[in-house]
Amino acid sequence: MVSLAFGTGNSAVSFADFGGGPSGGVHNIAHQSKNATTVDALSTITEWYAARVTEFVQSLAAIPEAGGTMLDNTLILFFSETGQYHEHNDIPLAVIGGKNLGNVGNRVLRYSRQVNDVGMAIAKQLQLPVTTFGDARWYKGPAPELFA
Image (cartoon, rainbow, N blue to C red; front, side, top):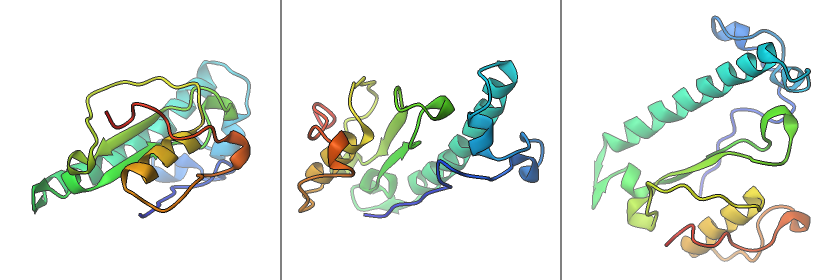
């Protein structure tokens, strides 16, 4: 199991440094008032991250491997630790790849649970010897139906 973080919820990365993105730290932008400018800035940042993940996914899909491609044998959980404006509701996430690991794909599931529960469902599917995932205060158990 590998984890890759682009940054933290307290990120001071300024996307102006990447050419054309919003200036100011991501964390500071997320705490600004909810208006069109802030929504546009956060959308631009999210699109940048999503494009990097898309490039990575496409590169895995292009590598032949036993039973299909490297993407078929790799399970990616793509998410943010918070929703827009640092809220802990409606955190979007995507489970990508992993066809040979039991990911059905091409579905949309909606949970009123925390990301911890999705992580535990993945750990259980991969038969990892763990009994909780993340902060126990937010953990209800493995998210149901993730692996149908």
